[in-house]
Amino acid sequence: QVDLVQSGGGSVQSGDSLELSCTSSGASFGAYCMGWFRQVPGKEREGVAQVDIGSTGKKTYAASVAGRFAISTDNAKNILFLRMADLRPEDSAMYYCAADWGACYTPDFGEGPAPANFESWGQGTQVTVSS
Image (cartoon, rainbow, N blue to C red):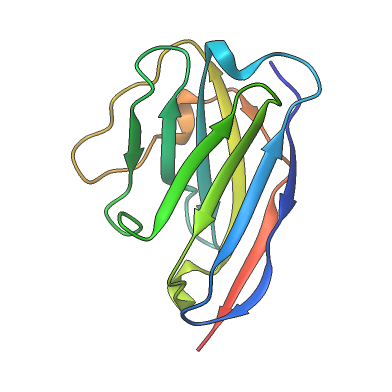
């Protein structure tokens, strides 16, 4: 497992942008699949995006965020980012970064990554979007 520490988040208006970051003080991201997830109370954790750093570099997004969210990394500094644009009230959730050693599993078309495939998690950061 790898220790992940998140930053960013907060309260914004509909249509605004926000960036989340996730860092590791230990292991290099170079061999990992890294992902972003979100969860609202009473609902299951939902995969938002993943990047296959350890293999192909492929980025995959859930249909609900494709075209608005962008996952990226600074491999030299072991930082994972999630840039969120055109935020909507339904994007309000607790957001988590996660890591899994090795290549990413490929989700079904339109689906985000599956939480069960990730072993290390950040502490979570709240994003609230007001209309």
